Length: 208
Image 1 (cartoon, rainbow, N blue to C red):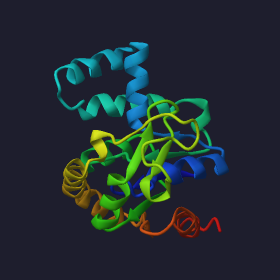
Image 2: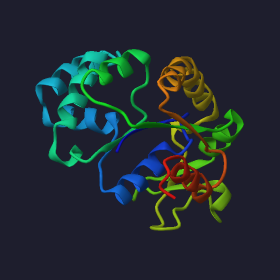
Image 3: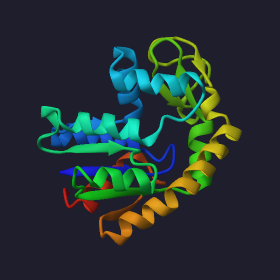
Image 4: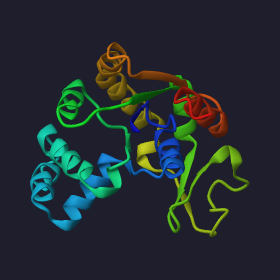
């Protein structure tokens, strides 16, 4: 099963993609992780990407698509895969369709207010990298797992979250329409609790 998870930042794409990938025994593919690995290993594509990243520019689609094409040729993708937050544009979707087929696209829907509340309340441990929400913490500065210091990342500041949402809406509205027109889009509510939302994902895919 070849799947794509779409949704605004904080909608649960990564959480649900990792869980479903484990259940189906297929890889969850994050282009961000893939990009960092290529740069770290200094592959030809990684070196090309570094030139743009070092200049503070976006990595071009052809470089990202090249990495994706290589990744899908790995043996663990033989029975399927889950893309987490990729493609981001119609151009990337069209390029992807030239060398692989997608079975379904999960579109996680959550109101901006829910996303802002989730992300702006998120805290990350500087020691163990655990992620928590202040609504579930007795002490919002101390990690309940290891005792490390919890930090509020700049990415999770409310102003930054608003900017990320604006970019998401601007880039992905056309992408959602693209996959809906192909009959591949499955809308799933992502505004509830983790278990409730994950159950919705499985129902949409007829896995529950």
